Image (tube, rainbow, N blue to C red; front, side):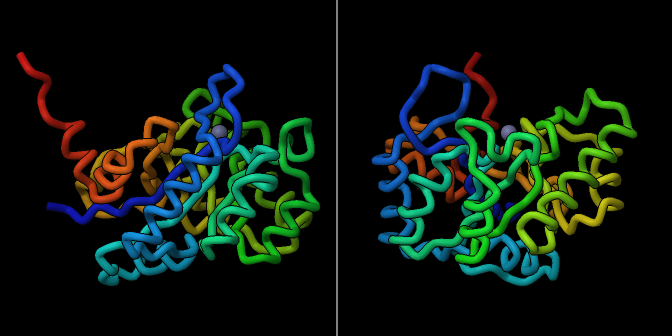
Amino acid sequence: MKRYIPILGYHKIGAHKGDHVPTVIPEVFEQHLAFLKQHRFEVWPVERLVGALAAGQRLPPRVTAITFDDGYAETYTVAWPLLKRFGFPATVFVATAEVGLPGFITWAQLREIAADGFTIGSHTVHHTYVPRAATALVQEEFRASKQQIEQAVGRSVAYLSYPVGGFTTEAQQLAREAGYAAAFTTNRTFHRNGLDLFAIRRIKMTDKDVHLMILWAKLSGFYDYFRHLPAPA
Ligand SMILES: [Zn+2]
C-alpha cells in the first residue's frame, strides 16, 4: 500500500452562513486540533513536509500539515488564535483580488501571520477555475498572484492551491514555469504512481468531521480506502 500523506484542507472556520463555503465551526475546529495533539500528530509547516516528500525521506507515522483556502477573515480572527494556542503552523492560500474585500483577510493580517511563522500561498488572482481558462490567463493568474503576495507580504511564495482543486497537465507545467515548488489540489485519492509535487492531495475538512473517528480515519488513510470500495450491488 502506498503511504498516504494526510494534509488537511480547510476553508472557513466560523459560523455557517448558508452558503456553499465548506465551513467548520470553531468548537469543532478546536476538537480537531485537540485530537491531533492528544494523538501526538506532528503538525509540520508545509515547507518541511513538501521538502521531505520531494527528497523521498521517510516520514514519521503521524505527521500532517494544515492548510486554508480562500483566506476568509475568520482565518485570522478565529483559526489563527486557536492554532497559536496549540502551537501548530498552517498555510493560507489567498486569491489576491479577494484580499481585503469584506469577509476576507487583509494584507496587514497576512503580514502579521507570516511574521508569526505561517506560510502564505497563492490561490490565483481571481479564484480562477484552471481547467476552463485559456493558457495565457492561467499563466497570468499564477504569475501575478505570486508576485502580488511576494510584494505585499515580503516573502517568497513557493506554493499554489488550484481553486476548487481543478488542474490540468498543462496547468501543472505552467505552475512549475511560474516558479512554484509545489501545487495542491483537493482530490482524496492515493498517490498511486508516486508523489506528484504539482498535484499534492488534501483532505477537504468539513463539519461532518465532528466525529473524531472519521477525522482519525481520514488522517490514517482508511477514509480513502473506504471511498474506493465498490458500491454494493
Ligand atoms: Zn478556493
